[in-house]
Image (cartoon, rainbow, N blue to C red; front, side, top):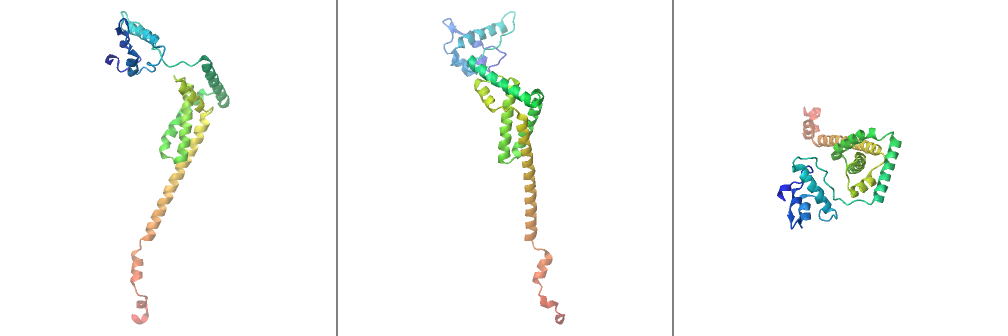
Length: 226
């Protein structure tokens, strides 16, 4: 419905109040999906979502108004055993990283700084160092996503767990060193090629004195011809 577009977290969806024969609209799931409510057309918990969103409407616009409950997520829930396995693995990674580096907290800022620096240098790199820099940055961002406690989907969490290294600082620093060496090498080659071009151009252009010497007959310099 136009009144609910665009979808905003702090504004309840008024379409949930519309009824047909006393029930929510039969096509409400399609409406919500078009608004941007993820999984609205496939979630078995849509009815509960509608109840909570209705509470949000009355909380926002009732008299007196009150604090709205958070909007319910329709994302599929992971099995408890799978969540426990992922959490245990993440905890092992954090403990291992903290043991290896003396505490992960103080490295967050360094990781972010190295990521920014490598992002800046990537357009200047040749193929292999650029590929290495992209991989290090991707892995570091996965590590940061897990460290930040960001809200992740099940697929994102699994991918980040696969990609996140135990010590991103080492990989970033190695990639940065390779990038800086590549930039220096490229600059030296460009300077060398420029000198070669200048030297070749100089050799290919005859001097005026040389041109005069080529047209003069050596016999004219003999004493008998003076």
